[in-house]
Image (tube, rainbow, N blue to C red; front, side, top):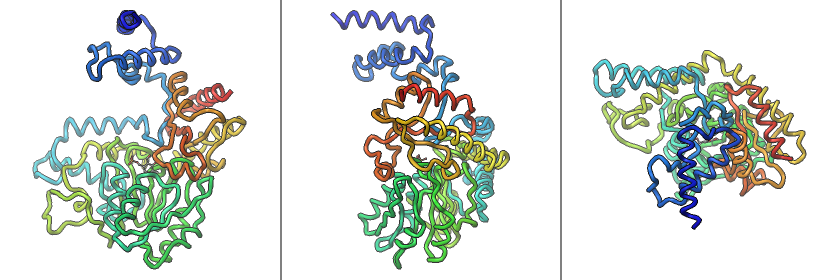
Length: 443
Ligand SMILES: Cc1ncc(COP(=O)(O)O)c(C=O)c1O
């Protein structure tokens, strides 16, 4: 009895949505979502009745203009929106520069090579890398980190890292540990703070690499890269940083910080599209590639970057990343950092006044990147994330943030926390709306 009635109701509801008789608004979203979720859940898998089977909230948003009413505060996961020049560059490359870089000799292939060359040069300029050829493009920072660690470390080598690393570092190191690489996990305190002297103490005769996250994606804590770099230089070990959360968000000078290996992702603060990243490796170190194949060069004489870029490259993506980096060079990273520090101060000042809320990490905005993770007493982070999205149109990220070890360090494992990560394109008013929503939920 219930099912036929439900089918009838759902059909009427779907028709009303399509006829735009039921407004799609923040306040009605929970209804739309639960309706669509239940409706599609009752259908045989993958056999929805055509356009009636709406599977996701995203589809609803795309079909309507509701996306304009959303507040995106999940830039630590991936930045949105991108500078206009990034969209334009990608479209231009796809439409007008269709050749394969480094392969054929015709004008379109040459233009494609120029796109990659210019993006490499821009990246070198942003991070004060003297020789741009020491930068290899990858599909994200995970691939960069994997190639660096697996391409350099051998059984018997020792590596020093921290207790707050992202899985992009933890997982390759766990695999290498099984293959005979020795790993020391230096403990950060419960605020994500790491003492450089603890890193120094962990270095042994066998240590080849010290790898640390530049800023934690859970605490936001910026680690003392300068001091660690100095220690590594003194001890003659390679210093590697995972700059996923800092590249483009704060100035990084590989020379001044003594960085030998810099791993960055393209789609966060560098404003490139997803599917882009790169790593810089100092002269004299040639990591073994994870992937072998054609590069358009004589394979016998392969050096960086060709040795680490086998196969056709993501030219539109790399061009988009180049446009993102050019935007940063023009706008100045220092200016962006200052703006983001102001936003973080606003969030911390407000949230620290709510007694049910516990903020992870330091309350000093100068010591953190543009993200704040927090918990609300008696509430599950996943519930908070859903409520912010469904009731207020505010997008954040909840859970473990691919960094369970960092949450163990913070004492927030296994539920994790909710993380708000604004960006350069967020306004003060949007942050106020977010804070108002959190206050309402916390009460
Ligand atoms: C600190 C850190 N490392 C690594 C990653 C992995 O980035 P990607 O998925 O772009 O490889 C992230 C992404 O959130 C991160 O925050």
